Image 1: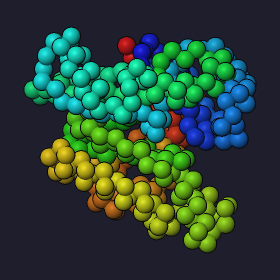
Image 2: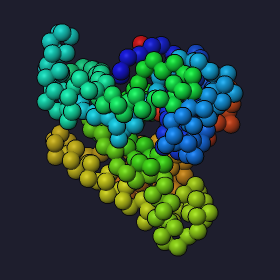
Image 3: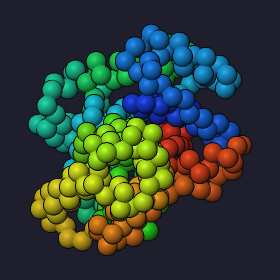
Image 4: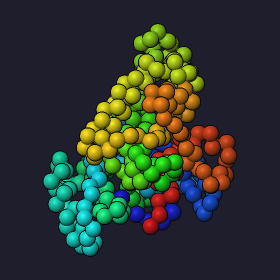
Amino acid sequence: MFGFFKSPLGVDLGASSLKVVQVQGKTVSVAAIVDIEKHRHDAGALGSQLEGFFKGLGLGGTPAVANVPGSHTFIRTVMLPKMPAKELKAALMWEVKKQLPYPLEDAVFDYVSAESGEHIAVTFAASEKYYAEAHIAPLKGAGLDVMALDINPLCLLRTIRPATAGNVVVLDMGATSTEIHIVKNNILRITRTVGAGGDQLKRGLVLEGLSEEEAEKVLREGSREQLSGPLSEILLEVFRSIDFYKANFQEKAIAEIILAGGVSLNPGVRDFFSEAFGLPVSVPDPFKDLLLADEGMRPLGPLFAIAAGLARRQA
């Protein structure tokens, strides 16, 4: 999406941390994370912090591809009849102008397509230029050469491996939000962002009577039972998304649930969703089939799912 080049440095700028991955051949030469919460709303200060971080990794001035948060992107997948590329682009532009909630000239826009039976599945994404530029300003301030932008669900689809070609729900649970993606045959069908993530889960635990320290510990390693209350809001939003999907796409059963993001590091979260859906729930290793220069980072793999997908972007 939004332009591309081969073998980029993948940079996932999140709400509370920045993750970076560099892949060289079959080796992950860099997998690093830095807490940015202190400077997240000050682009100048954040740029200065990240400049030191990247220089420390020997990555100053490196070409990079970054993500655009789901809250700042408009993403749709449409099914169109098979047609020549030129006609496809014209048909898609008509769809985009019809659906986009702001003028196309105010947006950064791109699309990907894949054959799906007798049709072509086209996923298009747009972000208002203002938000896209503001999001990557700290990266440019840090000295990175940001050559492309991509969207989170497509990054995840490069690193996760659904066990089925059926309907799969992918939950990417970060610090301040959860992105709900529904995929079929490795094609993104719908995506939603809800404002409930690790921070809100922690607040819910505090409201149940835990201290900040106790809530943080439960979020990291608590059981399904301890997390069931705070996770119920996310679960409700997932059910709503599934109901919408079934009604609008004439689909039936969900076959699998896949988790990503920092919240999914806790096995209790996986157990909660597995029991709620009565389905297999997996937390894939985004570094599977790759060697890690620092194998100690592999247990933190779900944190790097987006950055790994950015780094494995191909022409």
